[in-house]
Length: 129
Image 1: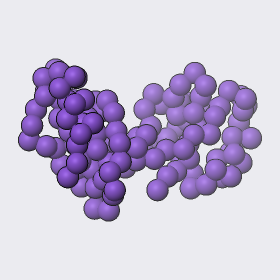
Image 2 (image 1 turned 90 degrees about the horizontal axis):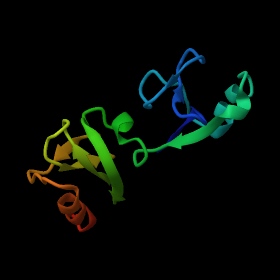
Image 3 (image 1 turned 180 degrees about the vertical axis):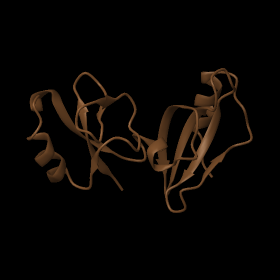
Image 4 (image 1 turned 60 degrees about the horizontal axis):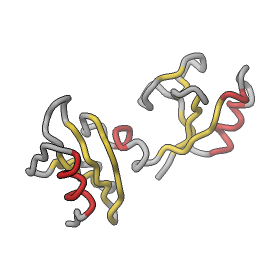
């Protein structure tokens, strides 16, 4: 499950109007089902050499595939049909582990709250359901 997008070498993803670059990949960014489709559009742009074609996956941009996932995402990994993320739901809040189901598109936060990155990293690295 992946899509392709056009990204500026300076950062940001090309918007639907093919003029501006968004810092974050979201619904307003143009995306393609295949690499070839993205390459065809990239060739028509003025600064083609300053634009890369990137693959967007649930591991690289979980917020795009799971709209219910909120907050800052620090790291992700896949365990079977689930994407596991370390998130900070709101700035300054305790860290949580989010479990995103690829089949149902549901997001569940674990009940445990972690005050620091080292604590949540330990739980994340040994996480299994």
